[in-house]
Length: 450
Image (cartoon, rainbow, N blue to C red; front, side):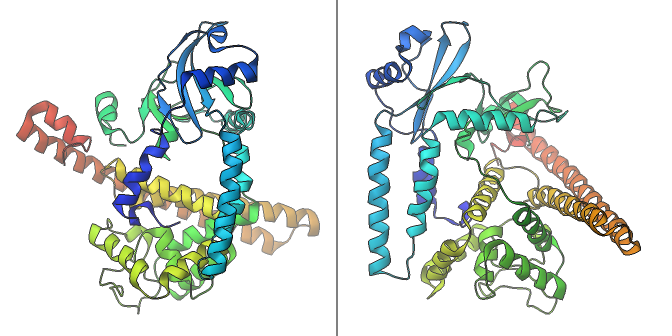
């Protein structure tokens, strides 16, 4: 659950190839699986089929082919043969091992990992489920007039074989590609970026293509609204109300008690605790400057990250508290925080000229919209149940004013960040031009030479 940046580099660099660089299955084994599942061989289905995969993840690999019926260039996603039977063995083994770990070391409680694996892995092993999720995501964005998100079409799917629209692009954290195509200042293995296509709904010169739809989940309204309140409290300036709100919504969202709250806050913010009250010291117990809110956060230094890592490993009882936090927290919340971490890590990988606070302002604007929509929904519900009242109308207008003050205010903050980022990018461009000419200027502006 901790921010990816807070994990040791040796861990993250070792695990990164699992996104799209695993060991591939043989062509012969794949052909036999396709024949078994579809009744046709690879040669029967495709005019052309490159036996060398363009990406290999832990569950499947992707090949480029040309569909025999339509002549279209397609991406063919093939599950590793025999994976399902090995997955059953892996799940049983993991469950047994975790049960023994709990028995021998009661403070290390990871049995919930086995439960999560048994719930989610079968869904990811059924490509028909993924095709349904892709259709749902397409429908969810169908009425958006402008969006940079593009969902590749799924042409056909069985449980282990899926044929999709082929997308020419690169990983969203590929700075070389971004610099070459976009002069850009804008989990990466499941996202591609490409130039915007004819008739694209993207308001920019690029599209972001979401490739993997194997694991989706719904968030109930109470969790969504309480999470929005939590996020808004994290960007609020320090005060007694801020301190109370942060702990209140941490309890509602993640079942976090006051003792565990500091660990929870560090995990979701990547900082050594924010300042909740004006009278709190300006430095943390680790000796680093304490920000009042996420909007005031300076870039996290490597020294601060290393201090947090060492504190988790060395401070007595802290590691056990992290494990207890993971065990206690609802699974949906863990998935939300995982997405939060991946987004923040991607922002760091792109070496953007915006501060880390920009991603927080974007999330906060949507959180304020979620809170306003909930308040408006409650107003109409009360109106239908109890009839009109002056207090109800007053609360609605007050909520509307608060929402626009918050939402529009954050938009102004973003505009200021955009201006500052443009100045920084121009400065980098000029430095690159001075030292290495036009090529150096473009590379410096794209974050490739810093």
